[in-house]
Picture (cartoon, chains in turn blue, purple):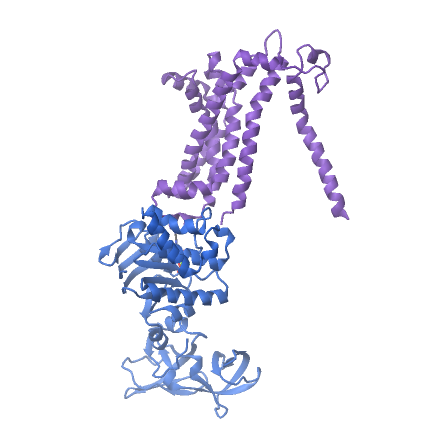
Length: 364
Length: 274
Ligand SMILES: Nc1ncnc2c1ncn2[C@@H]1O[C@H](COP(=O)(O)OP(=O)(O)O)[C@@H](O)[C@H]1O
Ligand SMILES: [Mg+2]
């Protein structure tokens, strides 16, 4: 087990800078999830840690060891690829044994380790099969088994669940978390799925266009997003964003006006804001309440019943809103809405967070 | 209903095509067993009236086994040499980060060598072989055959090497393999069907080569079979029986080899590259 330290890591492909200065300290035994939209450089970062891509600039340390110029095999990491990358001409057993053979591990030790991985991942019935004779979920487990037997310092996962169907994905997600608890090894996990990130991570790193937007525990990112991007990326359904105008800001007390001329009091904060700066109010679906006594009416477009609750999609003054509620209104009807001002975030024109919500309803 | 008629028509068509291709071969086999007098008089008969082994006996005494051995050495040697270097070259072309135009111009050059008439390089190659003292030797012939076989192998193997997913090699990299081990344990087995196909085509090419053998071999005991065959066409007489006997004997090894490799080819394809 080991910590991983990235210092000012940069990567250029020809003239395109894909990673633009990544600083990150991954703790020993941590389950860290790198999340971000497609093409933001997550895989590249992971491949650089693995040593499959060279670093253009900066430094990678595993434990106290600077591995920036060390071959992949000597970094003591194991990686699970999105495509699984199982050797098609070898049986499940040989797939797992290959790395051990190459490392010159004695035969008895090989058998011991593989047997253990086979037990953990319940691969008994398949050990003599070739990968082509396995289902997606089974291949996935073999790929994980191949990583486990190496007993690496760090596990790297590159979107390992994205080729599985939804149900299997949920199962594997739990299995991976159990595996982490059992082994206690540092794991770095890449995904574009914020749900995976929220449920699995000790800590999440949100990336966009080659930079880290924010890092923190899932709850921190959910409750205190540093900017509009993170606010929009984390949480499902997505946070509502409403363009607002600053009405006045005196004695530290600020009031903003919504497009439907409703005023919202946002309490105090230090930054002063230009009067005609384009601001955006962010509020999660749980922060909008249906209130028949409210004069502000929203047109209901569709409802999305989920059993224990309903998401209501609607429009008010051309602004789309999603509201979480218990009882579904009829599509096409008008409902009164009320914004809980304690649950409002405010973002400036650059998307930086000016004010964070004071109150939260926790949700995954 | 059409589905019932279709197979019948299909098989009849198949039989016709097969006959078309088999006829000359049957003729060759027939003639090889026909006594010398007979094939001149009854000009159009497939089956000999009095089958004989006389041509084979004559060939055996005349030194056929030696020529066969020469051919095997030269053809197999040239094929293995071309496979080894063709495989390495195509791997380098696929995986190594050369500038694109270099890759392309190299492949174009290789293609041009493949397309040019071999006689163009006959004199330079003669000088070369003479210079290194390999005229009239099997080894020399193996080397000059690379003019045919190497370009062919590079082009054939290129597509097979391209099919090996990069992520497999990366996984092997993490598993602690260096380049030679990766080639041996991962790339080579995955290219096996391609190698088998290339092997058989290249082998046939080298087996039947005539021009360079004619130019660079002078001692009769060093001759390969295609060259040996030409001995039986003389100014006075064409020894059809011996000629066809050699034809039959020299096509048998290729036939068995193709049959053997074909089974392997099929198994390779069903292994599924995924
Ligand atoms: N080998 C490469 N050569 C050139 N550009 C690349 C290469 N690999 C990735 N990129 C580029 O780097 C960016 C980030 O890619 P990647 O790390 O795969 O993103 P992600 O995994 O977050 O979807 C993309 O714009 C991609 O086009
Ligand atoms: Mg990716």
